[in-house]
Image (tube, rainbow, N blue to C red; front, side):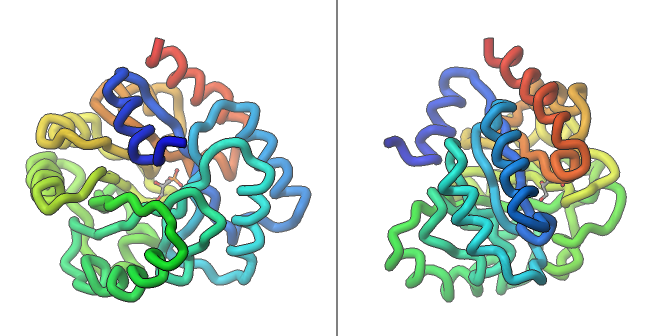
Length: 249
Ligand code: 1GP
């Protein structure tokens, strides 16, 4: 089977889009809830399940991940908030370098701790330039990382940052307004980043409506990530993923 990164690159070449749902293991309360989430993912057309969070306080991460992997038919990709969220049960991991910030631990420090473990378990790593964007309120990702987000109305900063990330060898860019953002990353910023780099662009944070999904795809996002809307109104996944199907036709 192709690696997840190869799949993303191939879809991009074919002009197709993808949709990921983000599952925060802390927000899944019991087995019935896990099953409900898995059923929705199966039937609503998500391409990838991302699992992780900036701050996990419950102990269920590895069990929930295993259960999702066993029962779900789509690839499971780790979106880790720390090296504790590494697992051989996933299909791949976004190896996040927080290039919008200047916190050395999140640019290279935690990677040094994680690298030997990742090598040992043989997990696919996707070197990802992670960029936190100010989308209306301070988010957990921004607070926990102790970094300033890129200002919402500064697409040129985002473009230059993404460009530097690509030049450093990163293989995709994740523009993130942060979980529960008031508004998504602007189409103008996505367009500027799209024009600046030739690698897949993932966009998440604050995306809740068909129009926002459409705008992100139109602006150049290759994959969008839905977290909060999936937690609060899981059935919305059906209509939001239809936008992807329509776009890709
Ligand atoms: C957060 O991009 C993800 O890192 C998803 O954000 O929860 O706002 O959908 P939401």
